[in-house]
Length: 173
Figure 1 (cartoon, rainbow, N blue to C red):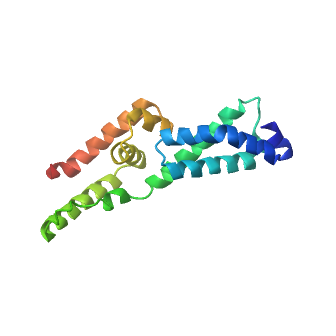
Figure 2 (cartoon, one colour; figure 1 turned 60 degrees about the vertical axis):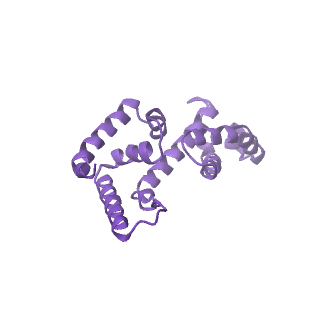
Figure 3 (tube, rainbow, N blue to C red; figure 1 turned 180 degrees about the vertical axis):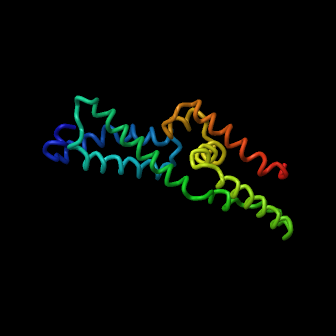
């Protein structure tokens, strides 16, 4: 790491990439990224390592810790960018292929619109945990690790979100 920082040594960066790249990709996959996104995040991580190498100090921790922190923060940033897109996953749901009539389709679209509106009415932190829990089917512990908050905070945000969504959507049951 010091060779990358001090002399901008590309071969040292390549060695770091060969050593840490697969490990970072594995971490990204565990954090819920797809294959292509995981590879993109590995690339972004090493671009950041190259650009910020001069900021690294071995007195503050191991190079591996610094590199994995950069990777984790990039994943969190990516999740935040993704959470700012208002639930396009719900809008792109495929409807049953039984070819329902127009009134059934209209009713389904109304339900999707109501759920989307209710979700967007939540605070951003609650939207994020609801999206990760229900749309991406992530376990609570993985959500906590992904967004960098304690497990209790994830559970609390979900409970608060349920409390806000229930009155808005109770007639849909």
